[in-house]
Length: 223
Ligand SMILES: Nc1ncnc2c1ncn2[C@@H]1O[C@H](COP(=O)(O)OP(=O)(O)OP(=O)(O)O)[C@@H](O)[C@H]1O
Image (cartoon, rainbow, N blue to C red; front, side, top):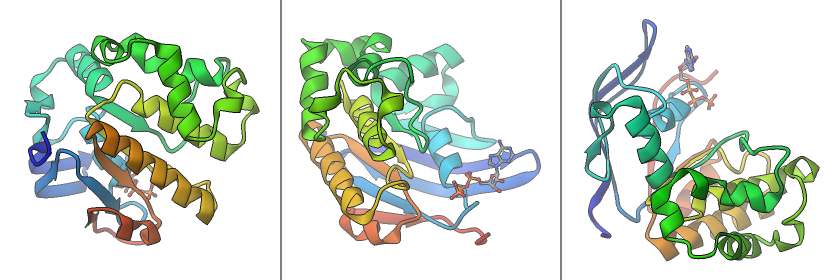
C-alpha cells in the first residue's frame, strides 16, 4: 500500500575486505516512491543496489524489503524472493543474447510463480510493455542485433513484467542521449505508477534527479 515502507536499512555497514564502502544508519523508501541515488564514482551506488537485491550481504546491520529481513533468509530463499519481488535493470542489461526480444522480456515469469500468476498471457503482456517502449517491431529479433538504446528498453520491459513491487535500476540511461534518456525515464515512471512499484534509480546524471520524488546522495571521493 502506498505510504508503507518498502525498503529499510538499519545501521548498515558494508565493506569489501577491509575497505568500508557504505555506512548508513537509516535509509527508508516508501512504497510507490521514486528515489534517485547519486554520488561520485566509487561512493557505493552499485554496492547499495547489490545489498538491496540480496546479491551482497551487509557486514553488519539489516536490509528489509517489504517487511522481510533478507539476512535471515537462506541463499535459495533470497533468490526466490528476488525473482518474485524485485525487477533489476543492470548497467550492462544482462540480456540473453540468443533469445529473442520477447523471450528476454518474458523470462522472469519462468522464475517466479508470483509474477507469472499476475500475468494471464505472457506473450500479450510482453507485447504490451514493448509497445509502450516503442519496441513492438523488434519482438522476434535477437537482442544482439539491437542498438544499445533498444537493448536498454528491453531490459526495462523485462524488469517490469509481472509487476514486481521494487524496481532497481543501475545507471540505465548511461548509453542514451538526452532525448532518449528522458523518454526512458518517462516510461519507467509510467509503468511504476501503473503498478505502484517503488523505484530506486542509480545515476551519475544529476539532471535527471529533479524529476524524482527524492534524491539520496552517497559520499565518497571523485575519481
Ligand atoms: N568486487 C569488489 N571487490 C572489492 N572492492 C570492490 C568490489 N566492488 C566494488 N568495490 C569497491 O567498493 C567501492 C564502491 O564501489 P561501487 O561500484 O559500489 O561504487 P559506485 O558508486 O557504483 O561507482 P561507479 O559510479 O564508478 O559505478 C569502490 O571503492 C570499489 O573499488
